[in-house]
Amino acid sequence: MSLGSYLRSHITLLAILGLALGAATVEWRLGHTYGHLQPRSHPRGAPQLQGEALQELARVLQGLYPEGAEANLTAGQARLEQGKLQEARLLLEKALEADRRNQQLLFLYARLLLDQGEPPEKVKAVVDELGRYFPRSREKVEEFFAQASKGRIKFAGEGQY
Amino acid sequence: MSGIALPFRRAYIIDARHDALWFLSLPFIAVALALLAHRYLPGGALVAVTLWITVPHFLITGLRVYGSPAEFARWRERFILSPILLILFAFGLAVYAPLTLVLLVMLWDHQHSLMQQYGFARIYDFKAKTGGPWAGKFDLYFNWVFFVNMLLVSPLFSSIWVRMLHEWHLPLSAAGVELVHQISWTVAVAYGLAYLGYLVWCLRQGHPLNPLKYLFLLSSYFLWYYTSFTSEYLMVFAVAHRLMHGIQYIAMIYYFNRNRVERTGGDSSLLNYLARPGHFKVFLLLCAASVLVWLALTEGAIRDLGFGVVGYSENFDLFSYSLVSSVALIHYWFDAFIWKVRRPEVQQGL
Image (cartoon, rainbow over all chains, first blue to last red; front, side, top):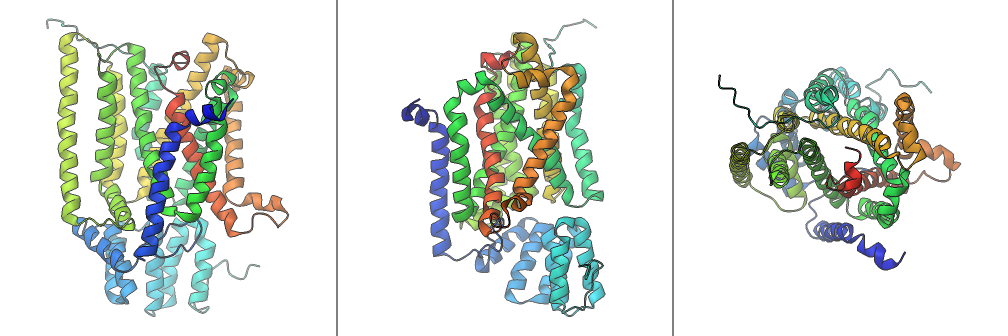
């Protein structure tokens, strides 16, 4: 079995991987040129848009689907980034009307309520909803909100260990 | 009634009862289950579908590739080198170019999905000897045009590709997206008319058609269009699609293996063993075992086998993430050439 036969049998795959390598080079250059992506927060996560690119995306999605959850979530993220909390809240609530089963949306909304100084029980209701719909991340999310609220929000599982 | 005999000829992928369940009704059942999951189950339902359906369907590709000596000998170089290449490549992308990895897996997944339905459509024509001289080409373009149209115009996928374009610093205005939608619909409608024209031509020329193929394509596209147009929640589409894609694949390959063993005697003691009617439970146990291995590799359970030294770095997370991606890529790559309906060794099991 020669090297040549191995290469010949992989021409199609190598062509696909070559294209992907080209895309990877473009991605690497983009990341270093425009700074429009946030660094990854987790090895399994993809980089998220930020700044003007995020605002532009929000404008496009809102133009296309003004009532859509994704459009209003993106617009809410863009407002949050600009520090416009009340505008962000209205957009996230609109997104929640369209779809309450969105992990990122519920998390952002709960965090926003906390930042706006809403009563702990109001924040906890959203975090509980998040835990019900997405039980895999429940523990981490509860830990985050327990810490972020400086212990004002208490969860059933706390202090077990 | 004059009793004109229309040139329709039926043949099945498996048989009438199984086709009715797995290929014609399943898409509707899958949509109903996805909607119920959306209404009553947490987001973890998608993980469960991935584990129970998608992972075993990866295993079945592995059984075909590495369990059959004849098949292995046929594509030996690819079966040895490709997995190594793809695992390393996916790891490299996971570390240095995560957007590229997402793009590669997503595009190949879509191509793989549409080609599976195309392949099943070809089996309907192959077994019924129907479709006229250009059915293969017409079906191939039908699947490309209507699947890509769904990706381009549905609210669910439009939001995804518009976001991806922005991530790649290729922003498109709302007007630009609407133009893409219009062009895509125009192409889809025009091709739909051309496809219908070809069917009419076949009937006039006396080329028989297999009505089950068209019912199968309609039910498949109902699932894709309905879930991508009516829900913004990716889970509804993903659950319905993975149920249809995975179960149809498992059913098809299970009966393919049985037919092949019955007709040729088979070439592998493992596949012969699994093909025996009483051994379906063993087949299910193997599927369950594959799920456990998958869980150990991807959910961190394997860390505990590393004496606390191996597996607790960020690299392990990247490794397990790239492993999930590379197993999918290996599956897409192998499936692209091992199931060609025109190959005699494939026809032996149909």
